[in-house]
Amino acid sequence: MARELLSAKALEAAYKRATAEATEKKTRVKVRDGDNLMLVVRPGGGASWLLQYRHAGERKGVTLGAWPDVGLKSARDLAMAAREQVARGVDPVAKRAAQQAKPAAKTATVRQMVTAWLAVQRVSDVYRGNIEAAFRKDVLPAIGAKEPSTVQRADIIEILRELEKREALVMLRRVRMWLKQVYEWALDSEDYPTVTANPVPTGHLRSFMAPATGHFPAITEPGEVPALMRAIRGYGQPVVRTALLFSAYVWQRPSEIREATWSEFDLAAAMWTIPASRMKMRKEHWVPLAPQVVELLRAHQGVVGDDGWLFPGFRYGKSLSESALSAALETMGYKGQHSPHGFRAMARTILVERLGAADAPLEKQLAHEEADKVRRAYNRAEFLAERTAIMRTWADWLDGQR
Image: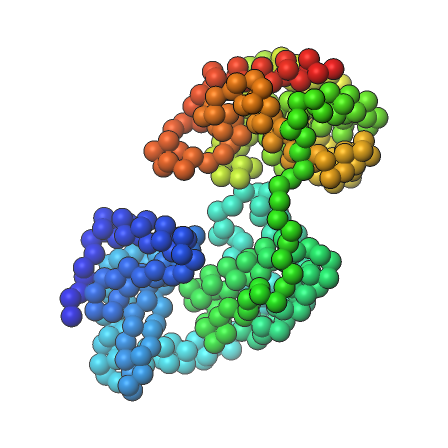
């Protein structure tokens, strides 16, 4: 049987193709190196080396480690050693399990496994915080002290049922997704050998209520904007009022606005630089500030100072919560009509339909990811002049709605 079919360059190219296919089809894709050695690529890009073999007439597979931590040459060396064991009548999987069962070391818990998984995730600080909060609230109280392989499907279903009772149907799906990712990551880690006996106990979602689909409520009719802006400018709490006005002017994502710090702003240059760690796509993002926004922020400094959170919350050391912004809009009478996220749809719709803004710089300013990989590789300042003009046009139009 042919062996060592891949070169390092060919492996990289095959991995990219396999990642795209795996993500599109939501299944694992195999990149073969010959003689039953293959790289198994999962949706989203995770990959592990696998050697298939026969022992006592039974077809089996032994995981050789995660790629790229285990490179092509190392995987081939490990595969050769495993083949030699099979030739001598030794089952590599059984031998590994026996070796790992010998030490009387303390067994890891689900809590420790989750912590280790989170430590290697390349996600924004905001997203990491969301995962940690969800696990602390809904997962770890139930199974955090258990050994990972002892967690049964019924344990996970019970956690998800509690979320369903609260009608947290979107969070239900996120928690299940994160748990599945944790267990699949553990499959490739030598620190959790017993997980292979019960790899992913998350079941399926068909028996759970589906969340209602739809967009964030947003006012997109120009004629309804004046009343909204008057209501916001008349709101009594100054920090919340400024946060809503700022959201209307710059229309970035609510989390990016609420967790902004003064260190990200250069008011003299009229520029807000959002670091990659806080962006959804993990790319630094520039937001030009119209003169009205600079004036708004200079006045805001007189209320909260010019250090720490741009919008400090009501609890010491915390930023303003999205619920505070949502509650303010509800108090103004906009429940179900407009949301903190709705400023994005409002600006995009009116800028295109009423103010004639070009689509490409507008999408760039919204920090929407380009579908074209070549365009996605352009630097952070792409269309900066056009985006600056758009932000000023929008601010002028908003002020004209008073």
